[in-house]
Length: 77
Image (cartoon, rainbow, N blue to C red):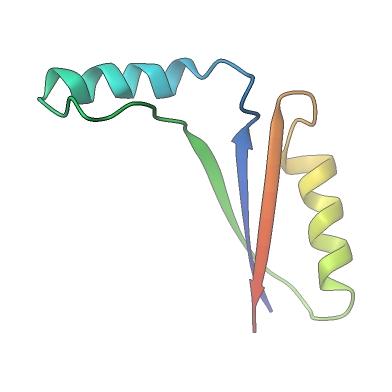
């Protein structure tokens, strides 16, 4: 089974990298861009047995900082 885990900053957390990208886009003439938020994507292959539980645990304990980040995941067979 394959899983995709997306980790991203919580909405209330300042995203300096996203702000830098937004400014660069404005400089290039993309004035309609209102916000940019950056994040991370992880692709994991694992056995199907208890996959949801394992993915949730890995994301919560290893991949995301629960103080400032949220995550979501999906699987495909």
